[in-house]
Length: 88
Image (cartoon, rainbow, N blue to C red; front, side, top):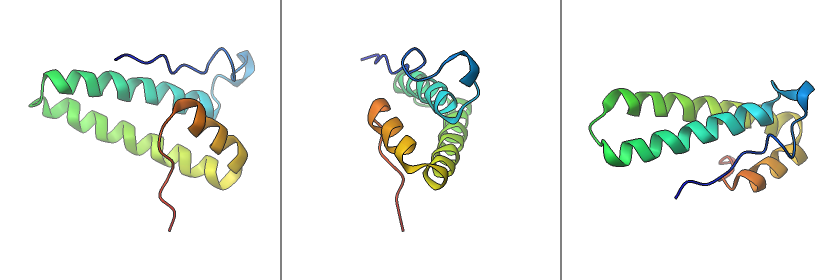
């Protein structure tokens, strides 16, 4: 069930390694890895805390991208196949 969600080769050039897209991509791959780990080790509370922190950081980055450039946000959401932010 490991998905290859890396967008590094298609979207991000060498100059854009710190861009929001590459950061969200990196966090998404870490989230998938931790989720698979927690399916085997349900009582690993330290990993659960780390997962919540990573999800929160990705959420903040996505909110920033949503405010700054909604077209890049929509493109990133569709490429990574993740749910968008809840709008109020």
